[in-house]
Every structure is written in C-alpha cells, then in structure tokens.
Image 1 (cartoon, helix red, strand yellow):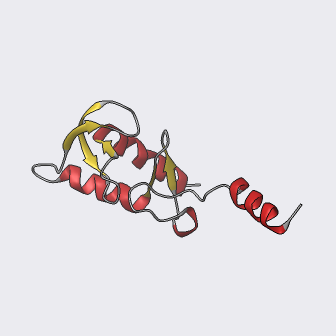
Image 2 (tube, one colour):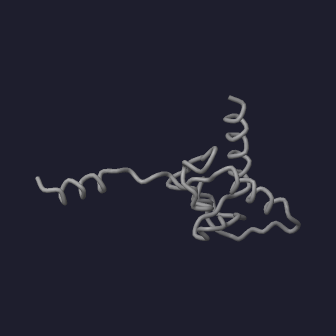
Image 3 (cartoon, rainbow, N blue to C red):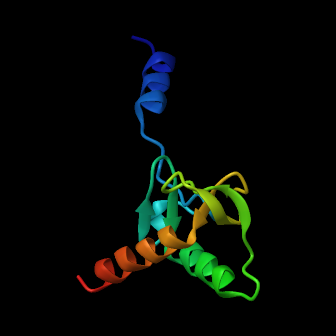
Length: 103
C-alpha cells in the first residue's frame, strides 16, 4: 500500500474534534461542552444565551431549538445562526454545567 493511500485512510478515519456550535472553539480549548443532537454548546456560549434571554425584551427569534426540537422563542447561537437554544434548554444546560463543576 502506497504512502498516499495510508495518509488518506488516516485522515478519513480520524474523528473530527468536537466543537462548540455557538463559537466554533474545539474541545481542547473548552472546559465543559454539553451535547445535544448534532449540536454542542460550551460554558461561554451558554452564559451568552442566558444573558440574552434575561434581557428586556429578550433577544429571541421564533425558530426550532437545536437541542429539544421545540419551535418557539429561541436564542440564536452567535457563530452559527442556523442553530439556537430555547429558555428551557438554557436552564437544563446550566444545571448540567453546575453538576459537572461540582465533581
């Protein structure tokens, strides 16, 4: 087997690093990363989403939450405006982050 084939197989077979859907940072640059179905959110993007939900009026749009799939008032993730997170999922991610930090 030639070197090109071995390199190609190594690249194709190598899993891509997990990245926050909100900011694009990879797992190595993030303390905590919470996953949803094909989306991930880091502690920084979670705090940003929680802050925008707490604004008066909240910075939300009507779209499907990328974490639970419900359509409603959702905060778009900054780097990837195709994905968003609803208030219920922001609260749940907050609980997950608190639990993980207490371990």
